[in-house]
Length: 527
Image 1 (cartoon, rainbow, N blue to C red):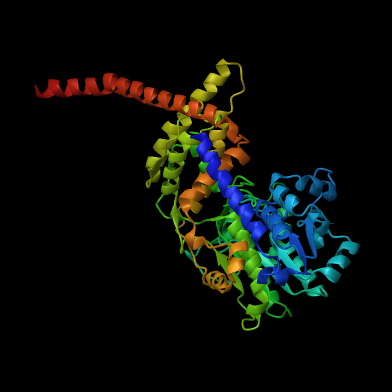
Image 2: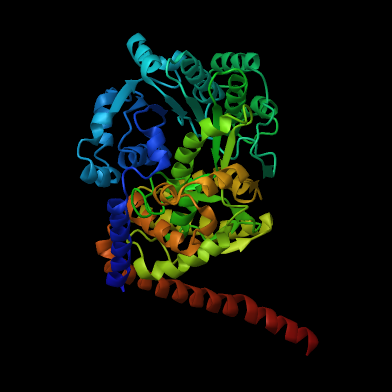
């Protein structure tokens, strides 16, 4: 069974590589547009950022330069950080195709949290003189980030980027990568600009007040300031979008925003099922697949997921489309990208796919046999949460203590419980991400560009994608190679037998100590 599954994925990989080798170099309109141009890109070290960098270096060979903003962290110079960055497995394909690809990349030392991006005078001059396309993808995505930090990184850095683009001598466009949830108080997310939650004067006042507090402004102070926004991430992204709108009204070049929904593992590029970070969906897949999560509160609405490679291809195509669209539309340049209105998928359906795949690949890190209950009542969830999550965590810690090991299950349980409200909010939001501009753009692309920069979300096979996701989490997050599948499957079968044996024992005990005495008492009353 294992060999058949592996052979199937090897064939997929071979087909992708053959397609790349057969693509004529000069037949792509998107490639022609980017030829000879220089990009300044922020957020290169994040999940989506890595996919973007790899894609443009591999599939846009005529790109002149790619400047990337990199922050010095823990004393490691950005240049050293980028050397390690390019050692990542996702760059193996581009390294094979273009061995000197790193020569196109120029590291710019900076910090989104610092004033004016923390740029040196020399780097600022270089960017102003050389950059054609500005792509601002960098952000803090932490929901519970200090508001002063979130405002500096997500709002003030966007303003600094826009100021740089305005000063640029070669600037042709500015693209801001936002999120489909920047205005998530609306269920219908249209491709338009929405009203900002406040003005820039209030932003500076909020930063000052937060920094004046020893531990930042407390939750009871922040909640009314956030208003309709559920967290600092969505709040600050909406403010940044409004800056793009304001600058775009007078700038001599197009300023646009790109709003992806929940970006998940890649479909096939740079690798099948590559997962670069653990976000909400990855936690759900991992927790369910490892037998750690068995019940969740779910109302049955679509989960708006998009593969990372499709999200990046749509971004690249949107940048290409901007100048042409700007000829007739000077304002409201927005591109949404999601799946809820075109090809929706559902958490309970994905869970079924997961259960079907688990017996085939397993995991040596499985805690228990995977099963999942979806409930639409919160009180039912909390009962299930207590019996299926709290009690097993309690028994696990007791076992660890008996073995002389440090208990950790309950701490993980309380950590997960603390963040449940955030998970429930985004799992049960019932948003509809409208994307007519993006769909029209896809229809206008040449057949060749649709192959190279594919983002046809309407025809995505969610079953096939889910299998890739499961395998991706196993390989890239859990760090389990596929050559241990046979052992993992044996472990899965053992846990399955243990699960059903435990259920039988518990049912027998329930029958003997509860149901039989109850029936005996009832019969004594009536007979």
